[in-house]
Image 1 (cartoon, rainbow, N blue to C red):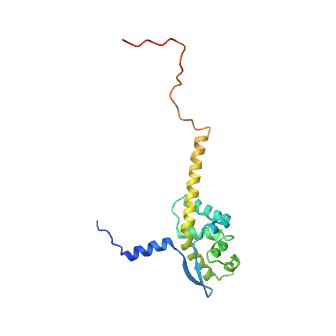
Image 2 (cartoon, rainbow, N blue to C red):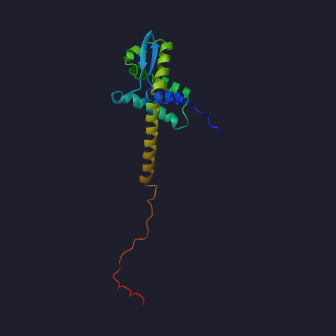
Image 3 (cartoon, rainbow, N blue to C red):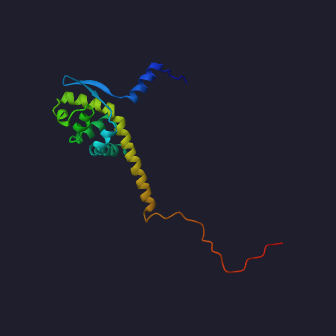
Length: 165
């Protein structure tokens, strides 16, 4: 079977996009950089990130996640999404809350493009940890029987049998 040859510059561009997903966009007449979250962002915003990650993981357990799923999840997380998106452009949540629907949609689209890897990785990690926890609970449950071992061999008080000669 023939293999598609990808020009080196396309491969390099894709590699660079993975390493540095930041994007420059125009929102409400202002040039902004939508950036990927860093460690401090993830620690300072742990609670809203955990809430969104939990919602993503819940849908992902049933199958692949589609754009419509993400859109619905974000709409249900209206209390935290402006904060999360605004942080990616170094703005306060109040700024994002005042955006027009069009500018807000542009911000959310680019925020998701830049940070989806962060959220998807966190959701997969949550699913993996939950599965391991459930498996451990199955082993710890009284309904499960412990692995059987061989019969208990105890040394008796009888004299040893002489070896055959």
